[in-house]
Length: 254
Ligand SMILES: [Zn+2]
Image 1 (spheres, protein in one colour):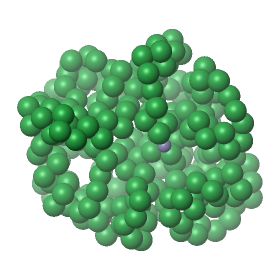
Image 2 (cartoon, protein in one colour):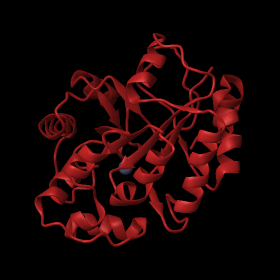
Image 3 (cartoon, rainbow, N blue to C red):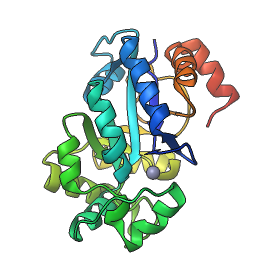
Image 4 (cartoon, rainbow, N blue to C red):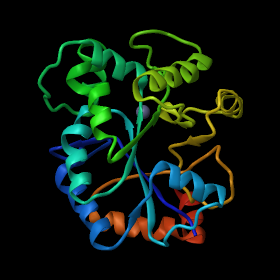
């Protein structure tokens, strides 16, 4: 069997580029809850991949990328309501910059606006360390590198992307992280080696596909979530099935 890994970015009032509407997200989470899907913690998923943990047939890993503030405002209460677990990959420099400035009111913005505001008013669109700590009962927090390779605040080497994000997570959340999600889906054999050298043991991509208990940790496949609960139901059926998921990913890899 395969465990599908879902990829979300924003949850906003309405559907838009890499954003699910609150309505669709709530319906999808209700679908998981009503139909007995188990949402794994990142640790459970890791153990499943190692072949050490047997998980129920209907198991799924929910992931979010970047650390947008709408995740705290919209996604967190819905996940909590249905008692579901999720994993959040954060850009540690963005979180840290957002945490340095005075708090400000959340104003909902679409993805393109959020990307602009990261450098000018990070707190308006990005979670703070305090919010991440609050969400820790539902979300496992992991690294999405330090800068996302966007150079908003500084231009650093790949080695520093790994070591800095690890350092900031250690200092603010108190554990040594070994889970990494590549920014904007960028990676190579070379980068995988570098990440492994810095003790990032499990690496998440933006490629679609199946995840089997084969102990291969360098290319975790994810499905970008779209549309509604019906769409989710169909895609969970496909990507829980190792054969079907393999064929679908061949036809449409991203
Ligand atoms: Zn990202």
